[in-house]
Length: 444
Ligand SMILES: NC(=O)c1ccc[n+]([C@@H]2O[C@H](COP(=O)([O-])OP(=O)(O)OC[C@H]3O[C@@H](n4cnc5c(N)ncnc54)[C@H](O)[C@@H]3O)[C@@H](O)[C@H]2O)c1
Image (cartoon, rainbow, N blue to C red; front, side, top):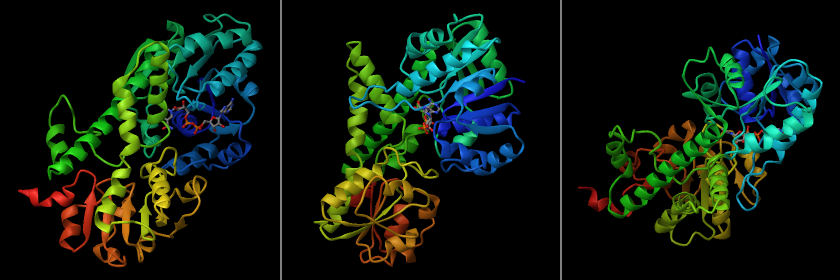
């Protein structure tokens, strides 16, 4: 049984590690952050993800997965190393490769002393050519070995969705293996032998591009649905009905057509900015992708416009902001639209009472000047309006009586959390992305 070392125990590294450990591989997750590693060894994940806690504890107790801060030793003692470190945006939007380069250098140093064949797999999202032109030469330089006989390289993009990360890692839709040579690819395919899904083998740069092309498409689909929502509102048409009809077309499919207040998270904006910057460096300006990003920066403010359309000037108004993570079932606040909304509301002199089931601690690190409630119902108390930024189940379960605690019963829904007609029937004023809003008279 091959032994696996994973460099970077974040969302991708840890869930990948857990998935392999669940398939009975011995996994060591290496991270620079000591506290993360100590917690991991007690079975505590560094972030919230459904089911992860329990599975990690079980696998730690079985001795199948552990954390360590020692990269060299663990790479040497394993057969395959996955690079799962962050690739953050630089100020100009281009990809930051410093962590990937460091990891490649350190792996190279570790391989210098190793006798047996070793496979290095890049799982971090990287711009096409990064694996062959940056990672591979660094490993060769620091290991003083030539790629081929002594070590191999693969690029294996990760497609997991936060909020469903464990399930996605255990049961992926597809596995893409970009390989330097056949031996590298064969070795990685052995690790994935018992993962039942479609598998595609290709070269390194195509695998890298598949990740960018996938994220670009998904983000485009969202910005498209949001654009349609804004147009639908003008005509008194419900965009959710429209997208239901659109999604019946086999060529389109019904997924990812939910209009809302924009996409957040660590990947879409970062990856699209990176591929835009990389394309520009090759003298191509990707107009469509630039617009996808622009659209996403203004979409959250639709909610503020809707609140103003009912309340007028928002100064000194109390607004309950529900949902702070970028989507439900995660505590990740990276690029959350809640931050843009909160900043704008504060500028307008609004008193914000915020609530999120998991993400309040992380959100507190991003912004000051907000009060927090202990649950959604409490946040609603005496509020002039409530803005819903992410549709956690807890919000969906709010009852009409809960809205009666508000000073003014106004719901501004960024994610179609509620069935508008039900709230309206109960005397609650409803405004929402892609809903008919003031144009309800066009209903027929
Ligand atoms: N988060 C997602 O949903 C997701 C999905 C698909 C792909 N990706 C991609 O995967 C990569 C990782 O993303 P993430 O969200 O897991 O990042 P993350 O920031 O959660 O985790 C990265 C970890 O790597 C550690 N690290 C950095 N350099 C290190 C080194 N030299 N040695 C040991 N540890 C090191 C950091 O301490 C951190 O814990 C990125 O390229 C991202 O674009 C992320």
